[in-house]
Image (spheres, rainbow, N blue to C red):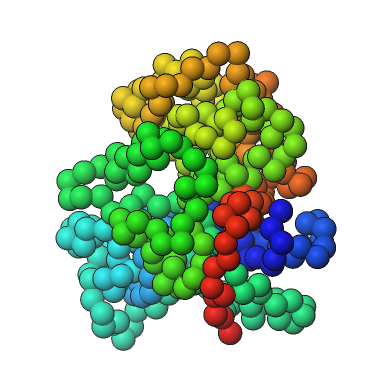
Amino acid sequence: MLGRPLLAIDIGGGTQDILLYRPDQPLENCVQLILPSPTVICARKVEAATAARRDVFLTGYLMGGGALVGALRRHLAAGLRVYATAAAARTVYDDLDRVRRLGIVVTEAPPDDAVTIKTGDVDLDTLAASLAPYGVELPGEVAIAVLDHGEAPQGMSDRLFRFQHWRRFVADGGKLTDLLYRRPPQYLTRMRAVQEQAPGAWLMDTGAAALWGALGDERVAAHSGEGLIVLNCGNQHTIGVLLQEGRVWGLFEHHTSVLSGHKLAAFVAKLRAGELTQEEVFNDGGHGCYIHPDYRPGKGFHFVAVTGPQRRLTIHQDYYWAAPFGDMMLSGCFGLIAAVAATGRQSAPVKHQ
């Protein structure tokens, strides 16, 4: 594991999982929190404004949409107004004209009578202030995982655009170490917004963090040489990966809400056989699938490890529920720690009050 303290934050669609890692004590004794995700927190504020018949004004940073976007749609449907700065509005769509067509007024000046809601995936100052009464200080080095669709070109599906990122990664060798960023690509706008809020932080996709984290389970790691399949069943997205000794040979990504246990098992079987296609997953409402042309399952890739809060989708399958260090909900945090340790480098400390 890592030889220095690290604040690891894995931000999903339902929860944000936080671990204050310290190498001088057992992992079980490190401070850890499972809190509502930022999009859920903001959505609740919108819902309260809807109930009070108040307009809302969003200001802050681009962040994960999910629950917040759903709440905004319901707010508009109730005949109420939504105002947002350009940066906050991109939480809904990167294309601001599309945001306006939805009925959101893009403006930098808040109306006097609107409820102001601050957007953003990270609030280290609030976290630090919450822990201060317990005598707990945040580590200076920070690693954060978010799911980033990326800014798709106008007219292109954001599902396809996100999966192009995965496809390039697998085609270029699929090295797990390439999934941790100091400087994320320009098109990964959510990660770059996070980096504005936490300058110097390491960045990673939530799916990648889950992969790294699952390998923290000794039973999972024991199958790395022969090849295995890792499933991360998140609250919004599910990703299945062909993994062997630090290399990703192929993967598919889908929306969890569309999946049944039977459908997921069928996708897993086809993935192992090398038969699952981009069209099959995309036409079912998912993002896609890509398997490297050199992939050969041989006698391996039969072991399936599952992590993620929706892992009950696999309850009727003979899959192994991974629990690195005995805690499945912190898989992404453990993955962030392992990935940072594997780089052998240290990032600049992140300033917070």
